Image 1 (spheres, rainbow, N blue to C red):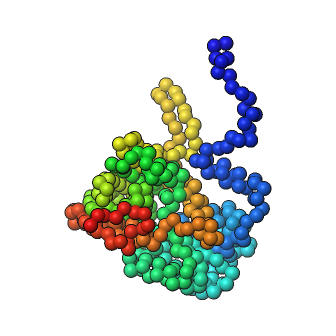
Image 2: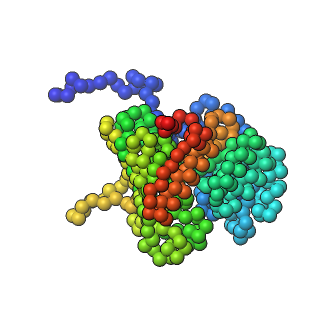
Length: 392
């Protein structure tokens, strides 16, 4: 036989030395669960969840799936949600609390941390109260509606010595994280161009859009954070163009489509393509280009089935919305926060990063309003460790 010369040794010869690729994080977790050390762990983190809305429901599912968490409290204003949630999730050992009575949560000496997933305008109050009670805090973005509020929250965190983690969940997406690692490893050389596409699905309700903070602070912040996190630098100039094709969104003085360009100190250019509604699914793409090649992240689908007939081939649609598309990211960011609380790692999203993203989003929004490019300057104390400093 022509290929007999290529016959190799039995695969059993190296069965004890072969292992999986490090990109298979799910298998890594599996090996942790079945290892001889599986029963050795720190005590679970006693946690309070604030809010049972869109984000809160996602976090609730992940909290209950984690053996590292004991959910002591749920703080929820809408009491009609209490009993259905108790039944659906079998929350026999969780106490439901109205925000008017939240002082008992802050005062509980056995509570380790609070996860804030309530409407944006409530974040600052809950964050400050939690920190004053000596709790670590995980907050959905933004920390506060105003930069001054964000500063107050981080100042309080510093003064009490507790972590305040702002949840930019796309950092924890396996594909986006791999792009960042490979860019930082120099696989592309100096990045010339980076592009993101973020088109929402389904169309958010007007009730939500009215309290969302606007498309720049509700949507664009994710792309801004991801781009600057991958590059390790902040832009010195931004320009935005925006429009409102949906009359109901125009009526509340917001935009539904935005194009952003950013110039960086190293010479890299970035573009962001945003939309409030894509009728074909939750469109999330990333492309990074350099002299040594290109990295890109395609849209993901719930399964990989391909149907072929006389008209061609087709796949199932991409994920419908963020809870399914970013399911891995939500779980991984919770695990990261738990690691921080238990002293296993340093917090990856710092106060400088959060504040910088808000500053850039403000500049992008100003550009859209004025139809002019906006210049940005950065002081030394605004830059996270390791980020590129603009030459004097």
